[in-house]
Length: 111
Image (cartoon, rainbow, N blue to C red; front, side, top):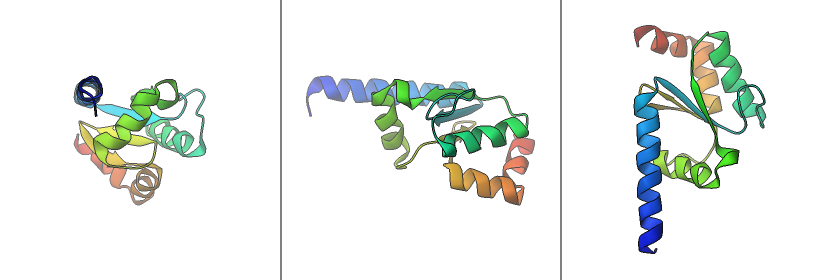
């Protein structure tokens, strides 16, 4: 790995860390909430919108470095990825299960 790629990786890590720290709810997704580019991203958006939770989204399809970087950041292989108050919650299946069980609503209620 070159010094340049190490620097980019560090910069990207810092950018992601700032993003999830500065925003209460962040969704890294394919597409946008208005136009999701995959069913998994669409489902997580639908859940957040149904719960009336404001969130910031990042379209990983617009930034290939971010697309891989977010996976490396969490050591999680898939997108979407949901962060609440700086903590990684999970991907579509986890968010859906938490919503179905009421655990997601409880998490938002206590924050």
